[in-house]
Length: 562
Image 1: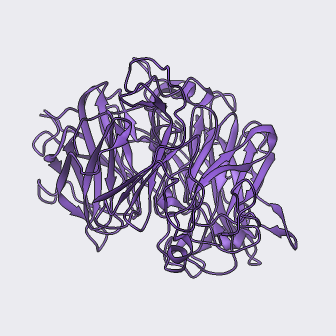
Image 2: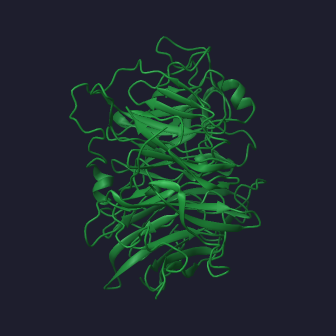
Image 3: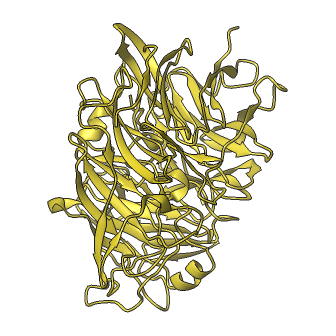
């Protein structure tokens, strides 16, 4: 079903950085280091030169944000920001520039491509999708609408909220899309949309839109269906039971989708699917709780992360975990609820290659205190003082612990303790995590619920258990997902959105080298910079502007005319 276009006419930022210093800590390094003879750099070369990061390369004339949190590792950093600096981001010179009005709630992070030719002319373009099943392109400088399309089929409307207030009053395009500049002729934006027809049938569809016009590519859309074998025969994906909340991942010319429930309603399980980005044909399906229940993937909107070797990492929500293990240390029935999962997509088959589950995983799932509320982040290769190189990933959930896993030996499951995990910082965060961390300059930033935004340095290939700095402000539910802008190693700024209730939001900007130094917040100039807030909003920074999703559009912040 092709979308009805109202074409009026009309790419990934890379990276970011910070410093040093130092809860009770559990540390285990029994998993071997990857390369004991690595070079002397404490942080090795990264990101990696694969297909998606090649799309995301930033040159003097091209700024791109093509995926959630800037890259496949989900670092949230843009190292090519040459306009915004700690010296000019203050309420006198920085503030609201305008507003991009759209037809519904904006839950997804906006995306960005500079110097894109639309209708014969170059534009710096920001892309926005809505819960009303619309996609938009705007000129990021003039704020003029370039194109707008609906991805609804004939006689369809967006889904109702399915009796769940998480996404309400309608569910359309919830997750952050992904752009592949080399696909679809002019570049393609991939998105998942939910809808229903006059007969009450629900649909989930994967679309690929030409980024210069909004038109569907020749293979688009495809209706999402799936089955997966289990002990009873097979389990079937029911489109009305799910929403695509976690952001899409583009890896090796595949689009990876992962599926969340509507609250904890109904009989749902944990699905991940892969589609060929050129044909939109389904290539791989995995269910991580095929013989159990629950175990959905939502991560507060964060996307599955990928490492340079092509493995995928995600945090699974509360669900069945079989604590009887086979000889390889995996649950006998394949049920891996509430786990830190590593997926292999090789040989055209999605499988769980490794995992970590805390020793009290069943109790945490039963209490809805699971890992799945937080996002995963793949760290660059790190060297310890002995010269060993470690390949790590990091995540946190509702229990307030920070878990660092060795990507080559994640720790699996032990009924008595968590000694198999590389590092566990117990109660390092004052509340649970409904957000994703960010990485910059050998430092990881976390924004838990009811807690300050904290900066944890990495020393000797481990997180220092006490933060080097933290904000004065504390962030109410859902906490905050920070994004970072910098010009290489310099002018680092940490951006964070605070929810104040009653739909009121505050944009904060902090000195990345010391979070106690607040550069700006949107309340400082009175009503001038006020905006309405959404849950789980991730700020996007590109070309001197900051873009924030709201219930009715996107706020655009930048340097004010003097």
